Image (tube, rainbow, N blue to C red; front, side, top):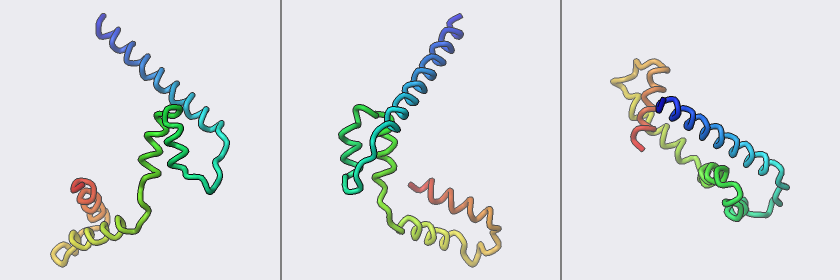
Length: 106
């Protein structure tokens, strides 16, 4: 009986958090658009208590520096993986190795 009660509680909390997320998103979508000259990070900071889940998500996305450095780094790593000794790697295997090298070394 305890296992059943635990599963029901787990389901309830999942449903409640999903509903809270939907309500938060609906509220956000009802906001008026900010002016192009306004700082979006400042706007989100001022509303982080109103939209706590969205704020956390947006901070991960808006704070990414837009440069070509990551792309260049991956190409450089690919050059280290695909060498004269490994010139017979097929495209899929080479892509997998580059992906693993890039994501496991971080």
